Length: 253
Image 1 (tube, rainbow, N blue to C red):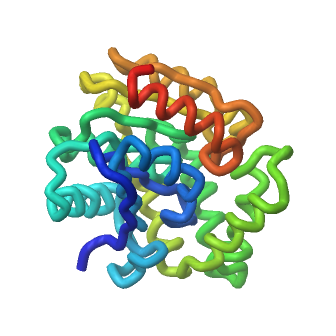
Image 2: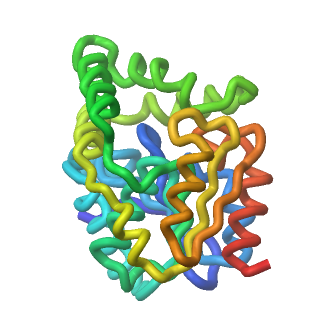
């Protein structure tokens, strides 16, 4: 069974990889803008959304291999790949394991380092909340204040809540373990020669702008851009600015 995905437009392929604990619907505000110039593939990562039939994810490498298999099945030799938060970790694993598949890389509100000791402790608390009666809903409400900027409106928050509550506890639990145990990919970026764009919400407290700038400084062909008025989910919080910066870079404008 392959990843469920949607596809839009024609042209060079652009893959959009979603954040935790969401699915491909996170990218709804990018479809119209991006599909005018690209063939946009938006998968639901293993266990999430319509890919829940694949079972819970076990690692970022597994999820990256799923994306490589999707590209193979779609006859795509090479693509631009954008990943936000968890999607960025999957994109980095894809670059490490299948470097020929990635033409250029957009790393959005994410980091190249592994979880710190503090971060791993945080995952343990999240797993305890998930399995201790809080469920996906309880975990999402605990995460939400750090996922979006204080200025983000109720409609956006409710849309994110709707997507999150559609996920299974098994997928969320598996992803938390995969997030906790993911590899450090600073070397992957340092050794890569592809163009890399780092996009980050100016109000992101989970992966702050200074971390994005430091990450992009590792790359010989990287540039970092801050998205104003956005937190950790910049693509849905300020889609106009996000789309403008991403498309401008993709098209060399």
